[in-house]
Image (cartoon, rainbow, N blue to C red):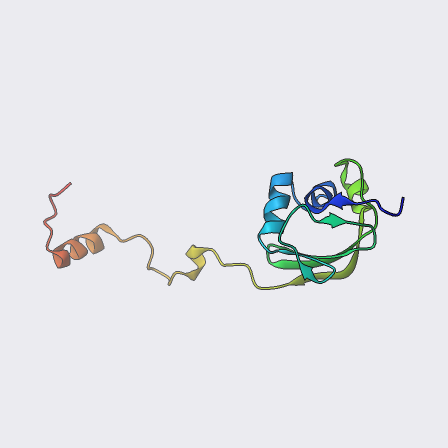
Length: 129
């Protein structure tokens, strides 16, 4: 059976790179997958054992080789047997810091006094609802 193939989105789902096939399809069509060095535009591309995949998952780039195709989405150990890592995951960028960490100290929610001062600057009276 040298001609065994499987759709890329199904394989990504079987190998547990994505939780649903729909998310696997979005990964493929979003330009986050390369098959043997070529960008993938469709989720229907066929993968075979021996193919090299490059996946961008969040802030990481993962390079894997397809070892087997699988017949179902099984438990994690079964899914890990479908591929082998060819390189350790590579961090592409630092995760975005939470907006509260980027804010200057003391510049959070305005106090009642600050709000009244802003209202005066804007020409509003304090009794408006």
